[in-house]
Length: 151
Length: 91
Length: 100
Image 1 (tube, chains in turn cyan, green, red):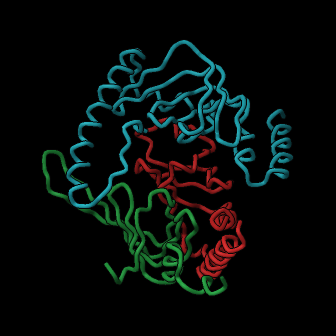
Image 2 (tube, chains in turn orange, red, green; image 1 turned 45 degrees about the horizontal axis):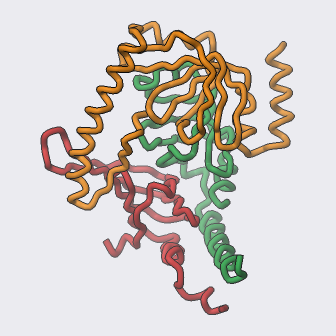
Image 3 (cartoon, helix red, strand yellow; image 1 turned 90 degrees about the vertical axis):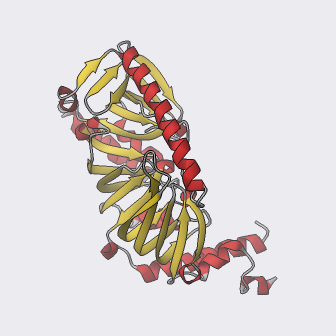
């Protein structure tokens, strides 16, 4: 029932803001979402508010880092996040019945350890890309690699 | 003033002359794309059809530059990746 | 605004978005805005990198991370698109002459 009434509200908003950022995200307010950041981390929590730049406020949020497809680390203390829009890659509404499914196949490790490993992996990626960048540049190709993007 | 409308006086006018023609687009991310141009705007966003993308890359510990290609029947290219646009016949 | 209008005509159609990190996400286009931010429903993607994409109902993608959008050619009227493109070029040239 409650989802029915909230989707009516959505319809109302959608009619007045047909093709705006607002129309796209308004339906996710007060729902559990994941936000993928440009540095590769995900924030998982409840979307409370946002603006046209996709600046987001996430309530009860935790940070999650996936490592090499078999392990992940997640911060334990829920926090409020104000995420600057330019750092947002994408945001998705989570189906709370399914959200734990992908984690069942993964091993959870300590967040601090995951963070350290992830930082180390980034350094290696930067080194590898610096070499590739040089080689490609000498042949007139420009890579789009940025040292703050690891998503 | 009025004749500046009909002559190629601005950089983007060169792209206009390529509409419905094969174009070569050089892109960030060590990529190139060849296809028929159907639309563009002031940000160099573009739509190409029958496009062939060439991606250049190197493998670890080898200076050799390799490439692979990908095809797309209809593709929108976001302008912020575009380095240069040219008539494909000139390349 | 040409591409904003163009993508509005593709709402409810299936598209494939390629991000600048090479990840491809297929889905039904539900919404587009002037910055070309997208909202997709019924998404499918390679989920090894982002396992939680399996549990996602809808996805908002910030336009700045997009490299390409692949479209089914049968959905595009290329003549219309070329005419619109020429008109937009004329209009922006007119703006400059008019001192805007």
